[in-house]
Length: 56
Image 1: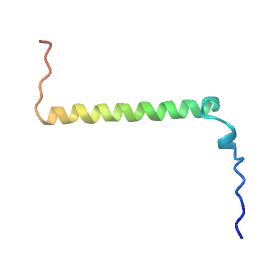
Image 2 (image 1 turned 90 degrees about the vertical axis):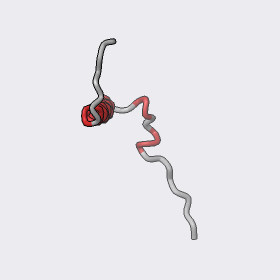
Image 3 (image 1 turned 120 degrees about the vertical axis):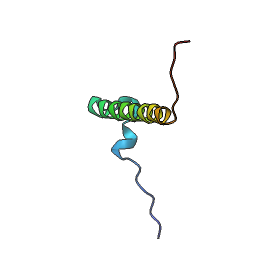
Image 4 (image 1 turned 90 degrees about the horizontal axis):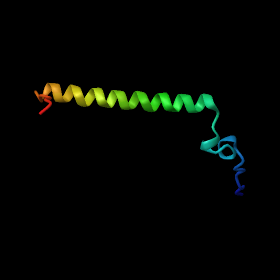
């Protein structure tokens, strides 16, 4: 009635440290885009709330 699943997929045989360079580059770009968009959202929020940046 129940069959054991075969867990030999490519994603499990290829650990994340040994990912293809193209995959690594795509992941790095997506992380960078998220960080930049988060920073832009924070700075925009500070501008809207009239926070002033000074060097003092």
